[in-house]
Image (cartoon, rainbow, N blue to C red):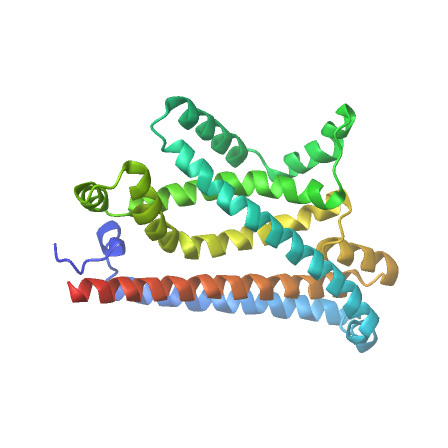
Length: 278
């Protein structure tokens, strides 16, 4: 097998001419079906008067934009704070799970598997309903952000663990040969490479955090989804409000996903350049 064989080629047989025609046909039919559904939806909206200009013009008003802008700021703040805490915590959990200390590895593994397996909504409800029953209360912001941190740290830990495992094992042998301890090898050699490898995945983890922030409505935190819900109760424009909110989320997620893709391409290009110099 040649060195240029990709993982995709190893796992899946490349389609022949007939298979490619079938894929092309299915792709075209899928696009046509999606366009038909969009057209049907627009026709239904038009029929019910939902596309009338007077129902959309208010969203160009400064006060409406400021109201949604406040929610967007809350969403970005919750996502940013959760990421700043969850990602380093996830790295600590990953290091704990691969630790040679059995007790530490067990504790980290239990933490990761528990918070990976539990829906974040249940964690939010625990902070909203269960903990206050025992006298433990938090501000609304932290009732949303702490569950985001707990769940994201567990999933991010596995991302970091995969990144550490992806670093060439020869790096450990080379580090030992120059006299570095296991801790020094991990700190100065393995971790910098692992973080670079998982950087695109961390950007995609931001997308998940951004989506998780929509649970802020449960604790009445002023994030974008909650502000949209409040605006619906004021304007009675349900379709218009949630379409505008959805477009904002789609744009944010698209930008983050695009950034992850660019980082992934850049890292593969650097890896290819490094291989070419050897």
